[in-house]
Length: 570
Image (tube, rainbow, N blue to C red; front, side, top):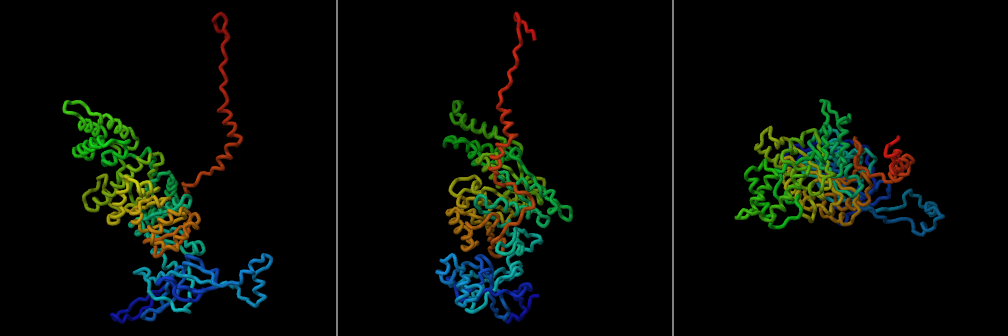
């Protein structure tokens, strides 16, 4: 129970911050004094088992009402201060503990460490962590934060509560002892970024987040741009008992193959068309822009490529009625768009086809060229953004293909392709608009990339929740130190040492940055690395050799008929 004390400023009872009852706290050291900055302190310990970089400790102070406050902190650095002489370690035949015992030193831990702690603050359920700006007194005891304490202060949501997403468990504690639960509302409303090197588990982590969004407690509306065809196994959610709600709810998973992706050409902008064309001259661009303005003014919702070609021919016609040289070249280029299987005069993936609460739609784009992927993504993102804005403002009525009366979340794999740092891109400006304004209209975006240094820095800075996994590239590490300040430099130093499935979570979805081990998926993972050795070995299996022999064997020639005097006698 929370204790109440009298607040002398207004005479009303005030609740003091408190935590659930816990076992006897474990003292692991004694405060030496302040650290290098005003937000650090140093304590001395010989307890090597309890001291781990990134783990949580606390000291206690009294507030103005003499109530105890637990000031949580994170271990940033561990430095060896004192040990038995190095000469003892030089002789490999002698056990150092034997020498220590001979000189009369019987302490089980002869090492002495200075541990630097970064202060986080005390936890207030209304305000989150509050830094008291009070350094601990030298001689104050430092306690290891218990699992029960960490459960109550690290997460904004309970594991089973509506709006919670169970990502995994705290890495530095026993597996499952301290679950890491994210705040879904904050995570999807203010956008997220998953930044990781190849093979570190970024797609796996993203799939875990999607699973949590589709559980009965959340029932989100999700769209995934899948350039590598890795997310199709999420369809297993439809028959998995974990996803069955008490009211009969089951998530729906729509996996659209490249052949099923259709974008109506009348939904494209001028620069979308330009991006799909081979290299064009300035003169050709001028005629194309003039023709585009004409067809969109006449019928902005239903024009076709053929309409655009006719307008180009008209724009490039001379006074004597002859045809200029630009129109035939543009006509040939525009006919390439008309022949594309992904752009249609009639068929179209409208927002009402892509989004629905309790449904995840996966657009498999692995057979589509990067230029076409850019234009398809830009068209869908732009239309989804306009649909949410216009629906919220009452400009669209039910029955319209753009009517979107609920918040949605869009996940982009290989985000550096759609929003490159130093290259033009059809998606970049659309993403900047959504990331800066989408929160107000219920349109959230998640970006996934293995090259954060190649992702546009303005776009990355708009993602308020970050999931950082193993990154070895020094340039990418340096980029993150400037782009993702919420994680803290001490945790960012851990990036090269993280193993597969380990992630640093920071930002608004948690109360403070944490090291997390991602939980096991409920569905199979679809992005495993190809087992090259089994394919090489399989080449030499007996039945494979027989198949190759049969395929390479020459065909038996047909027997020639016997002929006598020009007549066959067979």
